[in-house]
Image (cartoon, rainbow over all chains, first blue to last red; front, side):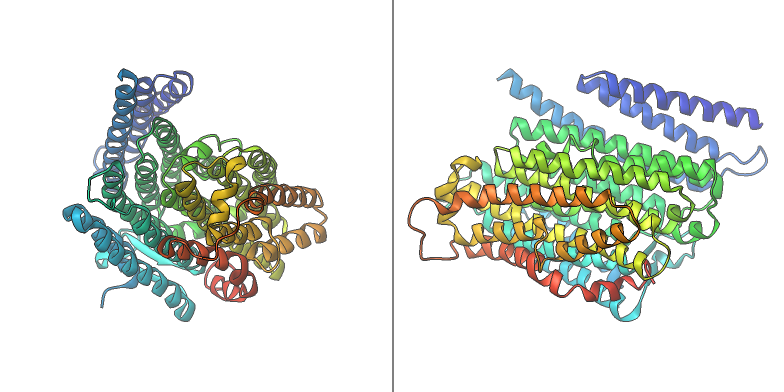
Length: 94
Length: 489
C-alpha cells in the first residue's frame, strides 16, 4: 500500500507546485486567493498521506490535527483577503 | 495559582473578548488588559531570571502529546521587550484614538473601536509565539499574528493601506504555507514536533536540509529579509502610528525570533557554513538597500519603515558570524549581541514611529522636507526621534553600539573582514537619514517653552527612545545573564 501513499504525496506536491506557480504569475486577487488555497490543499494532502500507517493500524492523529487547524486558518485568511478585496472594489466604483 | 506563562497569553486574549463585548469601554478595558498582560510578560522574564527555564504542559498531558509552553532566556528577553513596547503602544493609543471633543462620531471612532480587539489579539498571538515549544504551535501563532497584523495595518481604510496589507496578508500566507510544508517534512522524518525532543534526534541529511530551507525560507518572507522585503515599507508606512510601531518593533521581530530559535536549537549544528553565509549576504544587501531607500524617502514613516528593512539586515549578518565562531565565550557574545540588537531596535523603532505619529497628527502630513515647524513645535517628539536615532545609528551608549562593537570585533578576529565595511557603511547611511529628519527641526519659528505637548502620547514614546539609546547599552549585562538560561553558555 506504500504505492497509494506515494500517489497521494505526489498529488499533494503537484497541487502545491501548481498553486505556487499560479500564485506567482497571475496578478488578479481572486486568482491569487484560489491559487493559495490550492497550495494549501496540496500541503494538507501531503499531511493526510503521511498519517497513513498501513491498512490495519489506525492513522496517526497528529497530522490530522494539523490539517484541521490549517483549514481553519486558511478559511479565516481567505475571508480577510476577500474583505480587503471587496473594500478595494467598492473604492473603485465610487 | 495560575501559571505566569499561561497568564501572559490569556490576559490579552480575555482583554480582546472584553473589549469586543463592551466597545464603549474599550480604551479603559483595553488599558487594564494591557497593564495585566505586560505584568504577566515581565513576570515570566523575572521568573526565568531567578529560576531558569520555565515550562508548563497544558492540561497535564506529557510530551509529545501536550501543548507545551516554554520560556528560556531568549524568549524571556524578547517577551520582556515586547511587554514594555506593547504597554507603551497601548498607553499611546488611548491618546491617539481620542474621541472627538464635541461628541460627534468620527471616522477615528470606528478605527478606535476596531483597534483594541485586534491589538490585544495580536499581543496574545505574539506572547504565545514567544512561549510556544513545538513547531506546529509556532505555525498557528505565526498565522494568528499575521492575520491580526494585516487587519490592524488596514485600519485606516485608505486605499494604499488596504492594498499594502492585502499584499502583506498574501505574502504572509505564502510564507506560512512554505513553513508548514517544512514542518510536514520534519514530522515525516522524525515523528515529533517538540523542539526540545527534535534537537536530540535531528541528523544532517537531505531531509533536514530541505526542511530547513523551507522553514527558514517561509520565515524570511515574514521577517522581510532582502529581497523579500518588498511588502514591508508600504504596509508599515500606511498603518496608524501605534500599529506601525507594533508591526515594525514586534511583528517582524517575532519572525526573526523564530529563525534564531530554529537555528540555535535545531539547524545550526547540522548546517553547512554556506547557508549561514547566504543569510549574511542577504542581510548585508538589506542593510545597504534599506538604508539607501531610507535616506531617499520623502515621508517620515516611509523612512522609518525602510530603516526597519536595514536593521533586520544587521540581525541576519549575525548568522554567519555565529556559525563560524567556535563554541565558547566568543560565540555566546555574538548571540547575545544579536539579541541585544533586536531588543534595542524594538524600543527605538517603536519610539520613532510613535513620535512620527505625533508629528504627523500635528502637521497633518509627514513629508520630511516640510516638517520644520511641526517638529519644532513638539520638542518631546523631536527629542524622541533624536534618541531613537542614536540607537538606530549605534552611537554610544545605545545597545546597538555594544552589539555592533562585538560584531565588528569578532568579524576582525575571525578574519571575516568583509562584514566590517557593510556595517560601517550602514552606520554612515543611518547617520544620514536620521540627521535628514533632525536638521528640519532647527530652522524655523521660536521654539516653544513647553517640552511636552501631549503627555499621554509623548511620554511612552520618550521612554522607549531613552530605553533604546541609554539604558540598554549601559545595562546590557543582565541580558547575558538571562540568555545563560537556554541559548548560550
